[in-house]
Amino acid sequence: MTIFANKSGGFYLTALAAILTLVALITYNSVMYTLTLTTVLLVVALVLELVPLFLNNAILTGVAPVVNTVLNGAAAMASASVMVNQIAYVISGLDQMDTIVSYIVFASVAIVAMLVNIVAAFLKWEK
Image (cartoon, rainbow, N blue to C red; front, side, top):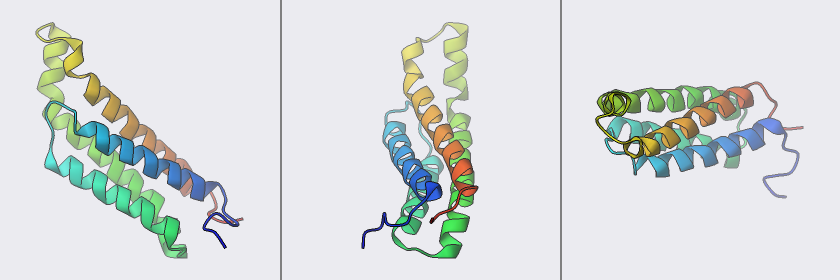
């Protein structure tokens, strides 16, 4: 029997959130100024999204999307703390837009992962 037997929307959205978190983690490496806390939050979120996919535990499947919502949101907010000056430089015209494009991509993917986790928290895990 495969891990996909009798799975419902919550399972697939959690898997999508894990993929989005992995993409956010990869894109965060190309941001100009990074914070170690953000990387740790993304790695923990990725692990907590992958564990319930392979361990069918009712507590993990119910709590994981909620915890991952907080972790992805905290990662997006923590990353903003070191990029505030760079964003201000771009707004004031001192730097080019391409200095923050990778940050915008990262923040967008992290926030979408957070939103997918919110939706996954309200859906059933199995049929």
